Length: 114
Image (cartoon, rainbow, N blue to C red):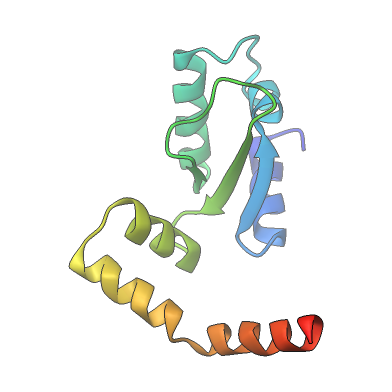
């Protein structure tokens, strides 16, 4: 990945979620150190390319991993529901917990784990 657009493509290819280390984000930003201003600039660059990150505050260690997700996606809705609790967020979490996907994961666990 050589640009934030290429990084967004990787997030899209990963189903809307992608793990990257802070060193890679620092390189994309063209910075030498991961000081607070560089981390803030990375957050703004990610947002301008339609991406959010977990944790909410980017770490200063280049080896720490960050999860990137697409803003406006179902994953973003879940992240928001967890990080900023609200009645609407509670509804979103309940719907995920009772969704067909949850049942499919349970069935897969049974097959794999016996």
